Image (cartoon, rainbow, N blue to C red; front, side, top):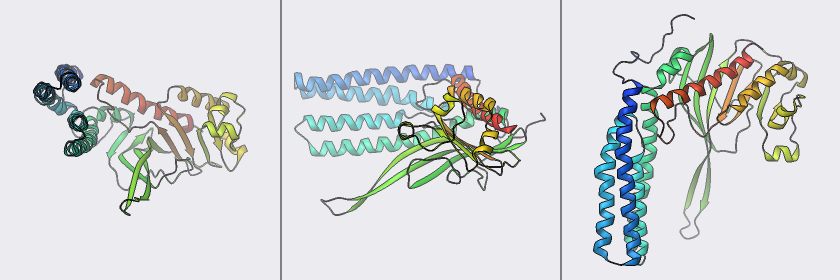
Amino acid sequence: MGMKRNDFGTPGAGRMTDAELSKKLGSYQRMESIGILLGVILVITGCIMMFVYRNLMVICILVFTGVALFLLVAKPAQTKKKALMQQELGGKIFSLLGVVIAVVGIILGGNLVMIVIGGVVLSLGQMVQGKSKDKAGRQTFDAIAPDIVGAALENVQMNPAPHLLDAEDTNIPLPSHTHCSSSGYVRGMYRNLTTELCIVKLTDVDEFQREETGMWEKNEREVYTGQWLLCELNREFPTWLTIWPREGLDKLFSAKTIKTGNEVFDKRFNLSSDDEAAALRILTPGRIERILTLADSSFGKFSVNLNPDGRLYLAVHSGRGFFDIGKGREMPDQLRRRFACELRWFTDLIDVFRGV
C-alpha cells in the first residue's frame, strides 16, 4: 500500500502522548471526584438535617459548602480536564444544583419560586451537557481519531460534499420516525473502494393539544442512534439482499424471511431479497459463518444491505456515534483501542462481501 494522504493537517503537531495525557487526566479526575463526593455528601447531609434538626442556619451552611466544593474544587479540575478532553461535568453541576433547589423548595412547604428556579437551572444544565458532549466529540476526534482513521483509510476527507450515504435510501428496516439526520461524515478509500461513514439519528415527533391552554405542543424523542458505513464495491450483483436482526415479534409471528439452512443464523437474523436463489449464491455458508463471528463481537445490533450496483450499507444500532467518548471515563489509550476496534469491525464486514 502506498503513502496515505489525509487532510487532518500535520500529524502529531502540538499533541501530547497518550502517557502524558493520561497522567494529567488522572490528576484532574481525582480532584474532580473528591470535589463531587464531598459536595454530594454535604448536600445530602443538609437535606437530612432539614428533617432531623430543622436548623436553617446549619442546613444552609452544609448545602452551600457542598455547592462551593463543586464550584471551587470540582469545577476548576473539570475545566482543566476539558482543555484536554471535553466532558459534561459543567452541565451536571447545573443539573444537580437545579434538583437540589427544587427539592429544598418542596421540603420548605412547596415554595413555588424555588421549585421554578430549580426547574430552570436543571433545564440549563441539560442544555449545557448536550452542547458539551457535542464539543467533546469534536475535540476527541481532533486529538485521537485522525491516526486511527488514517491507518484504516486512504485519502481521508472530513465532511465531504455532497454526501454519498443516505440512510433512507436503503432497504434496512428502521424504527418509525418523522425526522432523519446524519452528521460526522468521513470519506476515504478502503482497499481502493470508496467508503463513507457517519452517525445517523432518527427522531419521532408527536403533536398534542393541551386541554388547559388549547395550545398545540410537540414532543420529540430520539428513537435511533447508530453508526453507518457505505462502501462502493465497484461491481454489480444479480440481486439485492438485506440482513437485519430478528426481534421478538419476528420470532413470534415468523416474519417472512429467506432460510439459509444455517440454524444459528436463521434464529438471529432475517434475510430478504427479490431473488432467493441469487441471494443464497451470494451468501455462501462461509460468509454466513464470518458474519456470525462478527456478530459475536459487535457493539450493537447490526444490519446489512447489499445493492445490485455494488453499494454496501452497514448499520450498527449502537446508541452512539463514531469516536464517541461516552461518559468520558476512558483514558486515551482505552479510547484508541475502542475506536480502532470498532472501525476494524466495519472493515472486516466489508471484507466479507468485498470478494463476492
